[in-house]
Length: 211
Image (cartoon, rainbow, N blue to C red; front, side, top):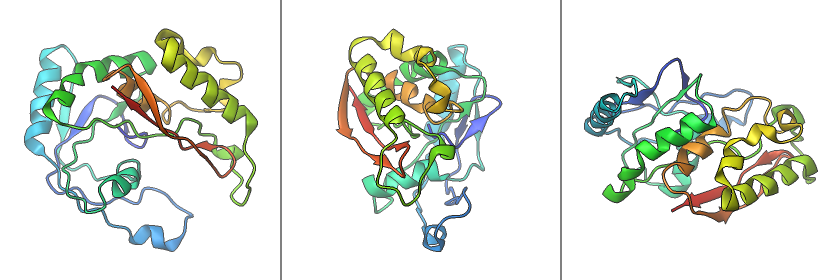
């Protein structure tokens, strides 16, 4: 699940040859030259859509969806040869943290089938607070990261109720970059930290693993 595919209803990509989509503007020219030619897996997409629909979760496949940068940006570091098939699931616009968590739980069985489940976004994401050349760290964003990780470790219901956090809109003016975290959380509740960093003052680039 990528923060960069929001939809009116739940969809699953079934494009066998998804194009690399540079769905951003104003960045370095070399970023627009990047290609990530991973294939899709339509049969898996169809199976998942059928399984979710049978469980009362309205879902359809999307045979033309391209590969947005929320997918290829992390995967090109994990699998630089683009040799792992991709099936992307959308983030419905009406979903909140609990809905994403419940959806992840419905797909937790994929782990037993050796299918990696990824939620792609940012732990903190306020573009208005970016400082492109700064080495400084937004202390409010750092404090939120620390609080959220602690809740993920000891109190998942509080983590899911993350909008109780004071001034949360200063960290996430909109929620789409955090919600994929809760999708991943639904597949395995035990959290461990793989990586922690801040970029451009306010972007939390942390990576968590859930088992």
